[in-house]
Structures are given as C-alpha cells and as structure tokens.
Image 1 (cartoon, rainbow, N blue to C red):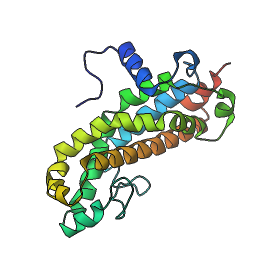
Image 2: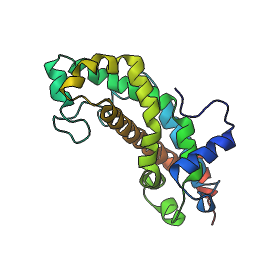
Image 3: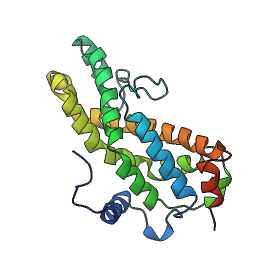
Length: 217
C-alpha cells in the first residue's frame, strides 16, 4: 500500500510529510542549489535501487538476517535456520527493500522539501556527500518509519510473513522484522543518494556544477 493516499495533491503530501517529520516550515532547505541536488540524487538512487537484484547484488547494502540476539530481531536467524528458512528469507528481504524503494520517491522528496538547513554554507562546501549526510542526520529515523508500511506490504506480498508465522510461538516478532528491514532499506537508499550526490558534484560540465552554482544565501 503506498504511504500517501492518491487523493492528496503534491502540496498536501508535503504538508503531511512535514507534520510527520516534525520539522518547522520556517527554516527549510533553499529551493535552489542544495534542494535540487538532493532531489536529483534521491530520484536517481531510487530508480537504481528499484531494479531487481539491486540490494542483493551490492555487498554494501545487501540485507541479511542479523546474528542471533540482535536487539531488533532477537533470535530470528537461529529460528529461521532451525526451520530451514534462512536462504529464502535473505532473498525475500532484499526483494522487499527493492519494492519499497520503487515507491519511496514521495517520502524522500517531501523530506527534502521539509528539512531544515542550519549550516548551508558548510554543506555546500563540505565533503562529497555533505548534503546527503545532513538529510540523513536530520530526517533518517523519520524516513525509516515512513518506509515501514511499504516494507510491511512488500514482506506480505512476497510471502515472508506467512512463511515465518510458524516461528511466532518460538519468539518471532513481525513488527521487529519490519522495523529492521525498513531501517536497512533506508540505510541502502542513503548510501546510494550519497553516491549520486558525489557524482553530481564531481561532474564539471553537468548538473552537479550548475546546481551548486545556484546556491545563494
């Protein structure tokens, strides 16, 4: 199920997202420079991550069941191994992340529109992923929370939750698994947004330079 109702207009989506992120409208990112840079980077990252196999084929973002005793998932790996489900679960978790990424553009666009910018000069002159790092720090937990419905829907659609229902009596927690995958999905998306930001900043004649030239204070 998409996170934003279809009936909402783009301005209404932004208002809903700003309220969900609890960010003040008075100190938002400039609509030129950094904001277009992040918007272009996030769109490109999400397009790549929505492709089949995107998460599972990249070791930097691949999602695997955590070790037994992980604070968010408990003994799920141990239980899954005992039940012969671990291999199928790993593949399904990555497919769920890809499906969530395919629907996440409104979430990231709204976060970019709403995010405050306390030190724009340092971000513009900072490292290759300065804007992404700022967005992640300021909105990362909220974005992960907004990804949860998309991840839950993908996990249900892929049959993961049905397959693991047999583990509930042994301590399986559906909500914790969803939280874990949503967090890992957000991590992967931010990693790719950072890569795209770096590419745009380093492009001497393309969009990156033009976007940064437009930044004013």
